Image 1: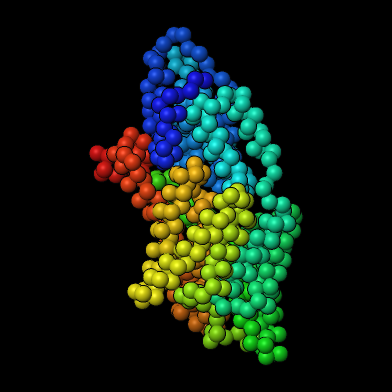
Image 2: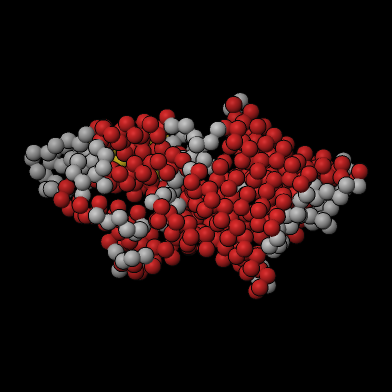
Length: 474
């Protein structure tokens, strides 16, 4: 495979997807000879298998359907698969190529049955796609690299990933006003909940019930600490244990992906991911609600007077908590270690913007959330372009400090304490904040696309499905 001088000579910071689209447009015109030409060389089946397996692993590791489609199409052109069409949904990947002449189309499909968010693999797969597009790797080398990526170990040991979940909860409890003892209890509760979920998974229990079980275990520890605090007059902010656990379990990645894919035109996948979000929220609500109802019936003094709230504090412990949540989320998602400092800074940034908008403008939480998410979208996409890495490992952990754990917990308690209207309003606010996070991050990325070199009128922008549906492409 010869190196394409047009692509290899562009080491600037233009958006990867746009560069790949422009490069494909030039290559496809050369590759697509007459459809009914008699002498036709059949495509290499190894190339077909490689493209399908790369797409499958990208989708299973947490990448969006738009990026998976672009990566597969780029590999198809790089390895000379003629007239390729790619279809990517939430669970299936299809690749069809037509050799021409009197040969029928060749179609292959892969089904994603198991998903594990692994941004280390996503990063390595992106590097493989870029090298193939630059002509820096031949087919045999690409196959060998894909095998190595599949066999590669995570940059973090399993115990550190489990610890990362606990650190999310402990950092979140510090942000909402919990003491060190409460942060330690939140850490323990979340780790035990995660181990409960893993135990149920090994027994073949559905993921919904895994999540419910993890939430019930962690919430029970929080209620137990609340009872001990009231009995011994310790004045501990025990509710921060449950808030921290909720924030560790909230589905930040599917939420952002569902809105991104809907905006980019992948409506089927976007709807499926949004349903996944609401099923996860349903599991959390079920677990926390059952424990809270049982606690009230047993006489535990659960009140709404002193619940943990996110607030707008800019003190050092809160900023450390924001950075800690973002970096702990990154570890749990196996984000490559060199990216962790940037993610910690972005976690602090989103919190400062959120608190500043609310404090200076006296704005509601949704406004501060949207402003912070847009900033994260802009900075995350800019960093991804500069470092030639995928964008999701930057933006997903960075939005974690604003996940609506405290509002969700308040809504569940209000419903439990016979205030259903106020409880439903709180739950609606939590959902709105979550959607604001996803939409804000996506809008930040659109701003980067709009004002990057060449603007939205470039060939790569026109070939984007979402752009073709707009008036700007007419």
